[in-house]
Length: 236
Image (tube, rainbow, N blue to C red; front, top):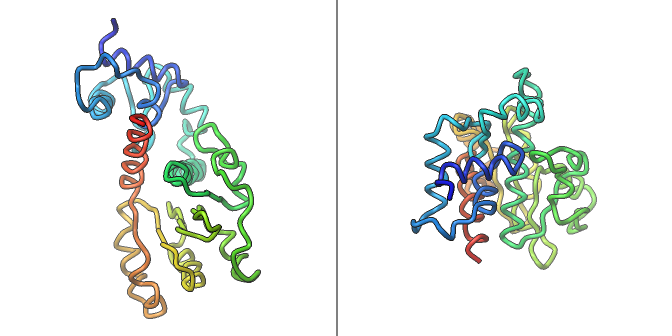
């Protein structure tokens, strides 16, 4: 029988040479693994073995597939714009996936429907194909530009998420300001390096009404939530 490292390598091969930790948790058969925390073992193997390389937090690939994978995601040239587009849709997809696993109805803007989460269009990931008319048209138009919305069973917004890799955080906060009358949560999803910028903008008096309602969620936090939710789904 292949050892654990060989099983992880084979699982990643089956997935096209790359995988998130969540995907690996579903592909690998842990029944013969003599450990109570097989997902943690998978993470350790991937992070410590030279057989793998990191694309994004929580997303790894096999070195033997490096050229193929980077070409597939148009990352080989290290073009800044393409890297930003890939990063944005990657975290957008993770937030949608988390919402789906939490049994929310998930929605993305019409202009993002053909963008890819890895190899899957975001329109195929979100389970709500059109935003609910939960408010007046002028406010709804603003809501329709938010990167990800989770709706509850009453067809009202539960959470709004803006992915801020390199764009202006203040623009997203302005959207949240316009949506403040709804009993919903607001999240800025960004790299940890942007937390101070977020904190400084939140100190502006205009954002006082939403100061205690907006949460900064760094990329690692999102990846960990996605991976942990995948563990739960695997157990069930």
